[in-house]
Length: 483
Image 1 (spheres, rainbow, N blue to C red):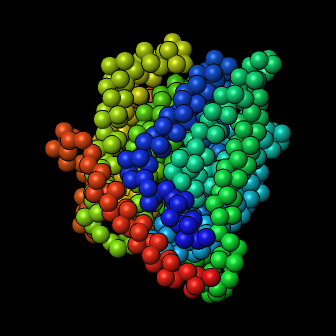
Image 2 (spheres, rainbow, N blue to C red):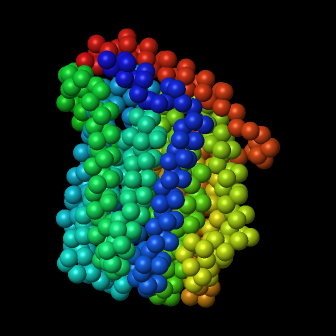
Image 3 (cartoon, rainbow, N blue to C red):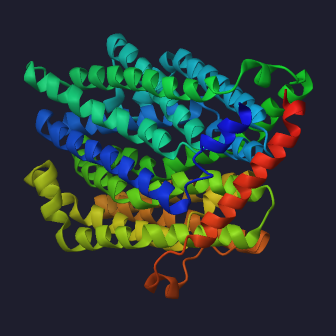
């Protein structure tokens, strides 16, 4: 039964290479990005620019809070579940995923309990974040469910369920809020509180659906295979491993959000909520334009984790270069659109008022293209045990981002904030890419000549298939020990 699961479930890794995983992830994220764009279009016409700006600020609070609650164990789970599958131990992979889910849920519960205590701090941080008790309860439900939803997405991808994980992270919530906002308009509720309630309800429903998908994976393995033969010492060790790897990544994830999203709060401090609406509209579109690399990374992470078990630098470099080739040209097309017609795109999507954010969109899109060229070095370092290095670089990048934003925004306005966000993202990937080349012997940079070639996935598929056959063989021989 366990062997069948491993060979068939994906456990998708055995049958789909980087290309197929990226394509399915890309298609799923297109749906999510479409939901993001449509919801932004609806909000821009549903709310005043000032309320739209406040929503942007609150959404960033929700995202940061959701990251803080999960202690970074999502990335750690991808690594350890992948390694367990690579060693042929599906039972250990299931145990690891359940422990990661428990840590994330408990962490999110702690965050929502502490959230009311942060009210005064948030108001001091930003006057537009002053909320009443009713709005606070709605935001608490939003934070908890959104955090758990994102966490479950990581766990699904850890098992190779790239499509389900991507849908959980990107599609369910974003498409759901479009429907919720449409209902709010239809019944005549065009207020900010209606938007917050709709966002919260959609997050709760999406989390329940995603949890059902994860439970199906757990149900495929008999309880005896998961519980029996699992010494308390081994379970405790895995808890410690998840936290030991997760906590540095946790700090890195929070700092990474501050590195990019922190500029929004700096804009609000110096320019006000209406400027946040302009900046936020361009920023949301830029997030959609980063879709190719995000989709590729969703397929890349579990494969890097499996390759890390043998530390095959040639295989990892092949994966990194193929990932870069997949993401580069779509990202380049988005950058060209931003440079030549960003004002028209923003005007069509959000209204003529938001065309003023064209310079922000152009700067961020060029920065994203540079990030694709450098490669997803942070995922390579994290999946090979260099999570502390990722944290250190995140500290430097986040500090430089906020410092630059604080210096440039008063004099250069939204352009200054965009430069600080884009430059810090590039430096973050660049520092880690140089470290990966030195420590792992892996170059994440996309070779210029590779841009003229089509991605070659035969080798990646072959090594993945070989790895899968090895997993099944090892697991079959050790199945008695697992039980």
